[in-house]
Length: 156
Image 1: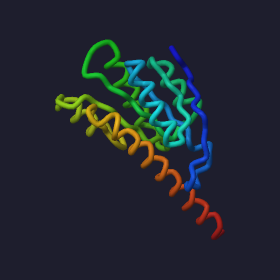
Image 2: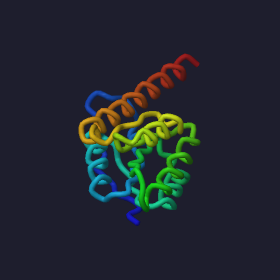
Image 3: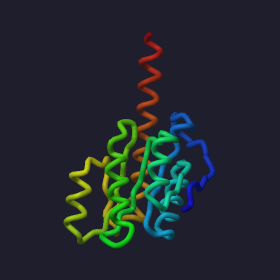
Image 4: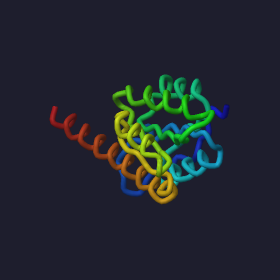
């Protein structure tokens, strides 16, 4: 298990999100794909926690209270079950946006991702290009949330 991989935390050039919000969990069944997701996260100013097994995912979700979790789901095999279970647990966290990366061409996986309540799902062929957009959109969503909370606090 590789419990934690910290990527440099860079201040985004035009985003007002507090740095503490820019941490995310990445869970993958494949080391190469996990590293690809972590690189994309770093490009969008996210600090990653890379988990390669179910207990590490759940521990990170509970202890670190991360606002974003990205799950790379295989269509079958050894990692499929624990990743699916961890994805469903992550969806239960009200302050956590959950992204599922699924293999295209498997309608069961796409249907499962849509029905599970994830914030976004990304078909595999678009993984390399689309994942940066997902990290960017999540960062911008948290920036807007932080700004709106500041505006509400200023009124009181």
